[in-house]
Length: 291
Image (cartoon, rainbow, N blue to C red; front, top):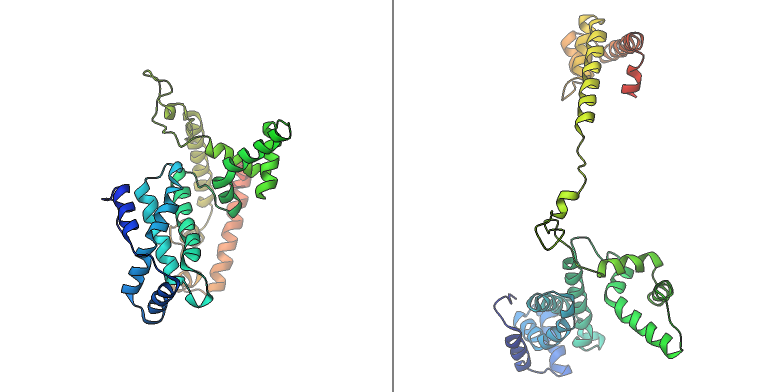
């Protein structure tokens, strides 16, 4: 249901013009869709309750999402409800559908509220949509008793009221305090620096890069010296087994050299032993690099 070209007034007018279904007609349409896949019955059922979807969507406008987007999510929730509705349970479709509609709208609002994922648990979702209301209720009740709640006391009572942790309440207060800000925004209204300019650079600094390059050169020199102490066959095995992007198997090297897999493994182990001994004797500090 594409709604981009519709105004709020057009949507509301079309919804008000839809028929009102009695319980028997509603159940008959639901059975026709469930039992026979009657798309005309599904369309009639969904169209009749678009007013419910629009009214529910309007309650979420304060979260900043465009009304057309909210209505579209509400319509999707309404269609999901129609697909899953069981008329034999004796429940009116509107009672069943409102929960699917609200769930679809809430998911949309939370997905688009911030680039940072908000409300990944049921407790966080309850906080997102009820924090301000519960805070106001608790403050009214405290005022009626002649009490004044400070911020810490209010957070504790909110956590108890909604059934979440104090840390979750503090986190959600921060999330709701403001929307995302662009890193390309200036720090002042005049021609100031952009916020992105003050972010620390995580890349290695010049000194660290020079030091790393020096260490790599030393390691290459030590390794070349140690490799020179191996005989040609041992050197070939080490290169093929450890220094290739795609190391060769013991079996393939055995076939090439006319030796068994076990013999190749033994030669490889012996070569590693010689390398370790040579590296340790020539440069004991090399073990700190290889650790």
